[in-house]
Amino acid sequence: MSRSLSDPLLELPAPEGLRAIVWRLETESGQARYLSAKNLCFLHAPTSLAELRFFLASPLWAGGASLTAFDGENVVGSVMAYWDSQENERTGLKTGYTEEIFVLPGWRKKASPPTSSAKV
Image (cartoon, rainbow, N blue to C red; front, side, top):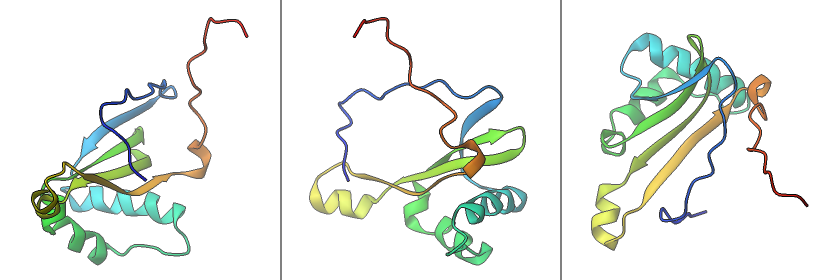
């Protein structure tokens, strides 16, 4: 799947009480909170703390971050995004990647698209 970055992004309102931040998962407690939520969404293929830390130590993560949604201190969804600098250099393209996209089941479909004033 690919998407042109010149196309505008659809803006959706966040559900009340939800906040989203760019998060680098620097602390052990943060990594544990992230994994707890992620593994609830991927019960068939849980990620270990060692696997997460291996990725966080990789060159890919050096230019990456997660956009993570919180309800208070609880992670409710996240997406990891990063560049592969070597591939971009090799191809001459500016290509980014998203992985580990998840939203806890109870938070799915909470935001609704903006309403239009146009009559159908």
